[in-house]
Each structure stands twice: as C-alpha cells, then as structure tokens.
Length: 50
Image 1 (cartoon, rainbow, N blue to C red):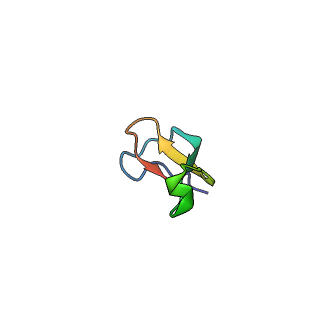
Image 2: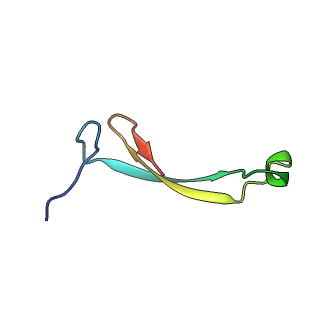
C-alpha cells in the first residue's frame, strides 16, 4: 500500500491537535465551546484539515 503525504508539499510529517469552537446562537454569545474537532496539519508547510 502506498503511503500518502501532504497534498500541498508532499511531506509525510504530520501532527494532530484537538481544538474546540463555539457554535451559533446562545453558545456563541456566551462563548461556550462545545464543538470539538481534530485538526491534522503538515509540519513542513502548515497546511491543515479538520
């Protein structure tokens, strides 16, 4: 199986980071961050995807 790399620069060095963001309505008004995501980013060029 062929290993894939970054679609921007081809680097195979990537990291992950968990982030939390507000939604809409009351959660946005009170800055309640209940939407959690994992971001995968390239350590070479910085390109990221959720």
